Length: 195
Image (cartoon, rainbow, N blue to C red; front, top):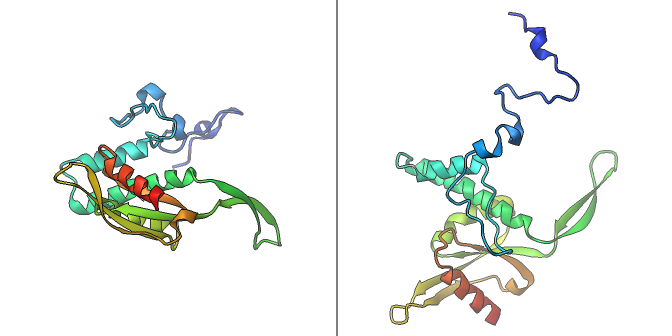
């Protein structure tokens, strides 16, 4: 069957839609796009929430579904963790870096991270994010901490830490996928500042 030539001709300046009929991020008006329950605006400038893209909302839907099996839950959780790590890396400072490409000695003006990076996972939940960090940053150093609530005072207490010796010279990505009150993270940061 020959294609209908009238469907292939587009006026100049009109964007061609993909075979699915969608056109990139403009596939629907904003009020018709899916939204998620985590789309709450945050009152603090230093807090970033992942953009509520259809991809993220689909991943969240899959991990929240009671019909999702264990293997799929792990797979989709790892995808979300990778998105989180990639977003965190976007907030690290960079320096200009010009390199020579393999193509006839041409140069490329890019960037490189300013300083070294490490991850610190809050045991045990934070360990679930280590794979995503390793996938994004080869041979990254990863430390571990264990913080538990003191039964007498109900305050978080550091029970164990194994951190890179040069952690003071590194940008630290704190890996904790189960943030509730934030007290474990806060306790770690206080301890890190005191070191």
